Image 1 (cartoon, helix red, strand yellow):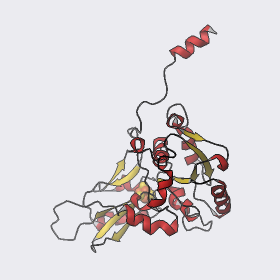
Image 2: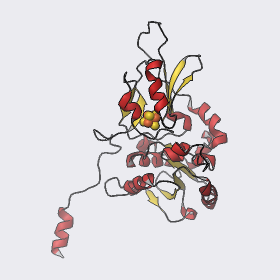
Image 3: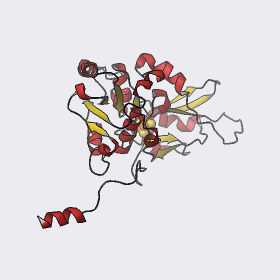
Image 4: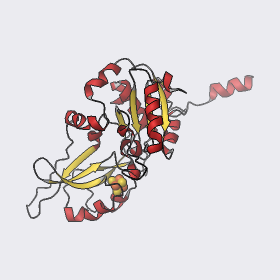
Length: 286
Ligand code: SF4
């Protein structure tokens, strides 16, 4: 008995004191646009090689050609990071990457005009949150005014139900978020066994056709107010499965999503950040 007590007293605390630590050196995160002006011909090969069209060319509201990066579609394969010659794309080691709207995951950089003597400055822009939320209502992003009922209500604690519809990598990271190192329970985030007791649904995987009805039923079994967090690229956009024969286009095709946590899979800190955002714990999630 004394031995056990001495072991417990002298044992070091494993729980991380640093909240939302950046990813360790050498760990691949999601790509981000560095803001460097880049040349379209130089990037054509990279855009063509992106397996999910997360990187694409587009035209902005001023009619200028832009490179667009959709982190909600990126599977973090690393191809663009490895081959980008101008370093227009770089590794993001930030762990606080959850966003409230789908469009906040999309960033853009203007491409170099041919022979225009560019001064090398660029404009990495994001569409406004409001416009994005408006635009995404039909595809399942909850309108901003409907986030209000949750404000304050879940700030101290929240009950979580996880619905897994895919490869389970994100499920492993959710499991890790509950281990002694990340210890999400210290922030009042508790996993429960039934949607009847849950305040928030964490959806992982691309939600194929076979899971459409179970996911809908699970959401309907929750009492109001209820929230949904899409965890990982598959749950956000379908990832590699998007528009395939399994009709796996992510959670927002079936239920309204409040928070998006990109990554393939996301780091446990990113998942905790997304849940904190759903709880309205701004100080924790900022
Ligand atoms: S890391 Fe993401 S954006 Fe880059 S090529 Fe792979 S899927 Fe596309």
